[in-house]
Amino acid sequence: MCAKKYFRIAVKSIIKQKKDLNQKVVAHKAGISPSYLSEILNDNREGGITICENIANACGYPLEKILKIGQQKLESDKRISEYARNDPRIEKIAIMLEQMPEEAVKDIQRMSEEKFENIRLREKIRNLKNYDEIF
Image (cartoon, rainbow, N blue to C red; front, side, top):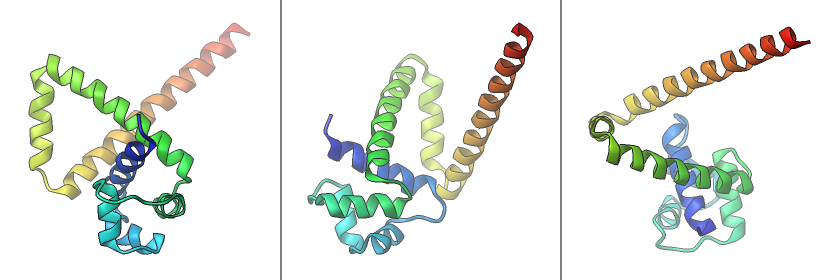
């Protein structure tokens, strides 16, 4: 898979997720025009390595991390697509999310991430307790 695609996917995703970011803010922080950023993100124009690094930094990540985020997002989206083909409820949820205001979707996403983080922390604590019991 092409690094340009990972870059575009990650930057679009980060802009959607972070409440304090939009294309205009990222473009300003990166030192480019919003229209130039839009052309890069829509694969209508090439961004050089320096421009891509500036955009990544404007999103709060180094370029290497942006590419990794894009790769993970693409893989995750593929898995979700497979689930959706096998479970019609997933498609209904996607339609509902598309019809919601952007801020509501961001709130749901943030709450979901917080919930999953809590679950991960509980699992780590459980594993630590099991470790202590062994020794």
